[in-house]
Image 1 (cartoon, rainbow, N blue to C red):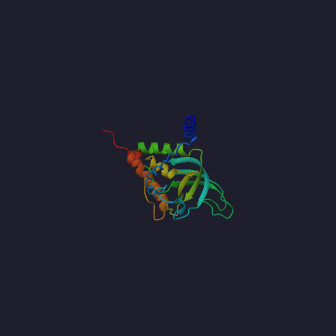
Image 2: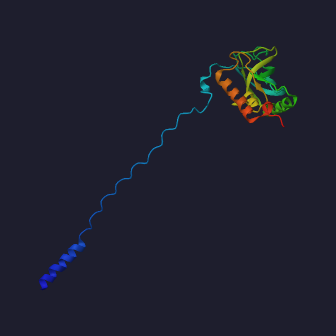
Image 3: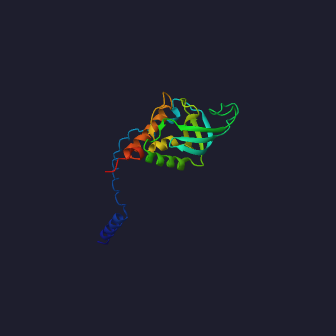
Length: 202
């Protein structure tokens, strides 16, 4: 009897000391579905600026005054040694020059023209500028150019504000990239009804 009891106790202790059976490992969750890759869109709708179709001769200058919504008087700096002088300047020297914003026409309406001239004045007054000469020149005494303050295009800014209209001065007056930028600026002004594109009040 005692022996039977001892055997039973040993069996109970052995069962208590036995390790619990391991649970079956959980099945890994199926991978989440991946979204299809987004379609490629170029960061600049006008293409790669570095692949512009033509170079421009560049000169540094400072704004002296604004004549009208598309014409400036600029103090052009002396060019680096061995560089061709700005049109109308003595060889190797700087000078005062009249500069026309290439491919831009001033507003015909006097009220809009006054606002456009004021906008240009506020944009360039007292500023240092970069003049990128257009290959197309026509009016004696006035040089057609793209005008920049840093990387900001004043030509494009006037068009975007509705302070000028776009007109091609001639083949290759600007390259394809610049033309796209200028035309897009004018379209933005048209869509927003700015300046020359403002809708008449009823």
